[in-house]
Length: 86
Image (tube, rainbow, N blue to C red; front, side, top):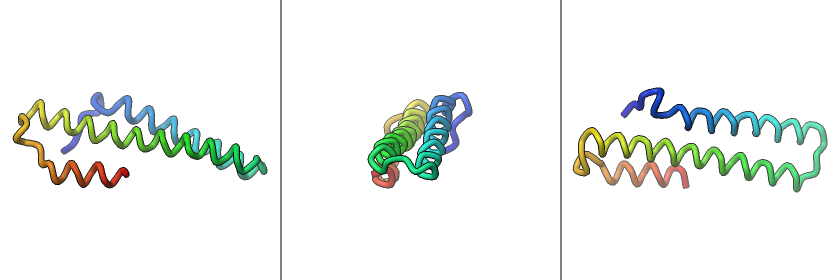
């Protein structure tokens, strides 16, 4: 399923923010930052990317439910998508 740009605008914004944050972590490491500081920031990036993934799956599920009703959802496929993010 393909989502419309307006349906995923917030997700794209979140992932772009995470991308910028990751670039900051890389700069921190290149500049010799403390390991603990870099790891804390990297954990924040990881969480932001994961949340973006979950939001994407949720948007797709919502679209399926609206367009096709509850019977249109392939539960095995949804489970596989969620587990891919775990």
